[in-house]
Amino acid sequence: MEKNLTFKTGGVDGCDCDEILRLIEQKKIDTTPLLTHTFPLREIEQAYDIFENRKEGVIKVAIRP
Image 1 (cartoon, rainbow, N blue to C red):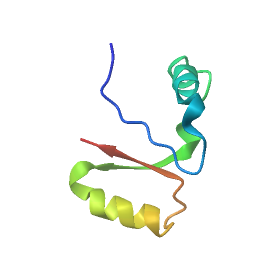
Image 2 (cartoon, rainbow, N blue to C red):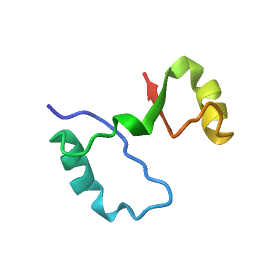
Image 3 (tube, rainbow, N blue to C red):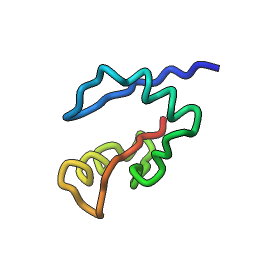
Image 4 (spheres, one colour):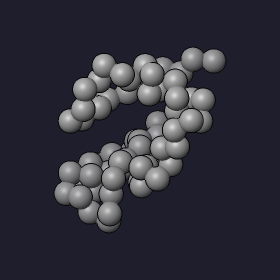
């Protein structure tokens, strides 16, 4: 099953994104420690504030629809 996802990188070369996504899908790369915060879409302003201002030990934020 394919998912309609947008994968964005910051501060890195995006040329290996397909390979990285494949490795994540195959569970060869564990991204769990990087995702420190998850918010519903309705709380996106709070999520952005936490991420932008590096609050609460944030590394990466995920937004749920």
